[in-house]
Image (cartoon, rainbow, N blue to C red; front, side):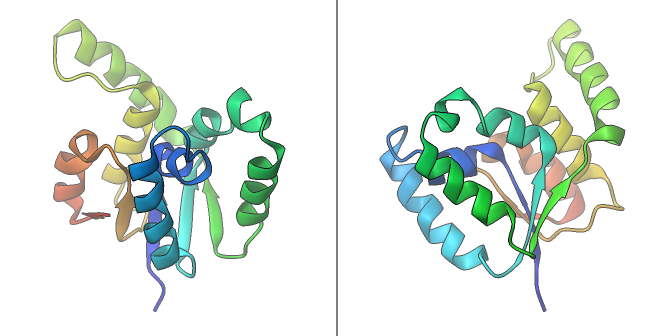
Length: 142
């Protein structure tokens, strides 16, 4: 049985940009070994955050990531139904001084709360941003 694993952009940044944080890079290397044969779900907004100018200038890393995306067990998750509610929650939380999340994190939170999006694990280094919504769905944070 393959698991479905939702990934946050910080995981991809740590994996493909070892200079940013060597400790997170080492952790990402061990995680990727564990998940490489599972169903990997990549939300579109995380691509916008990760595939940025910095990565584009590192052609070897960009090409490695492109090859990874082409694997049959890697699936891009459309954010169309999540982005408007996420945007509203981002403004609402700021207005009333709740905890604030980036728009990308808010979209991921909406995805996590969607019972129709089936996944077993979330890979992130920002555990505090997602532990409440993951607990509601019984999602394990790697």
